[in-house]
View 1 (cartoon, rainbow, N blue to C red):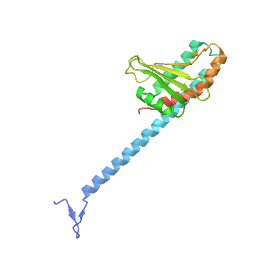
View 2: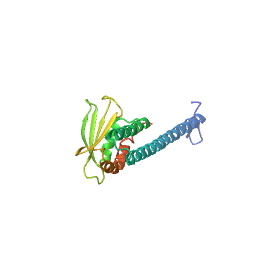
View 3: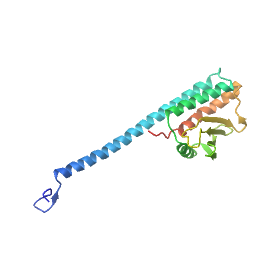
View 4: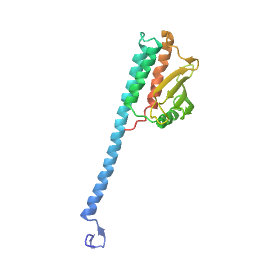
Length: 190
């Protein structure tokens, strides 16, 4: 009872200890908000970096007329996705949730998700492209957090990369596809 302070009107007044506790609580709340804001800003900065990486790498890889061999194109795509994986750790659940969110923006449908075989496939109608693009992702195992291989095809079959005109047609849509894939990879754990 000696800690309590009572004024002339029998009102309990906070002690110095109570005031310090209240200040500590307030400072903790401010620190929590500042930490959340910092995480959000870090995430946005990382997303911008990934966006730049995807768009610039795809643009450079797919608009170079000397890169016409199927193997070279495949290697270029794999290198891009390898760099994307290094830049962000993305869980499969986050990818699938993001695909669901993207369906409002793009005409995207999840065709199959075979966890046992570590395979995920979606169909994306990218803006004004005439036929849908199939995006197939394979994982090292069913617990893998990110894909080890991504294959892009259209409904006519695997897109031929031997002729530059066909390559150029694919590349025009790939700029939009880069945005789609960037969006899928935006859920980053910091």
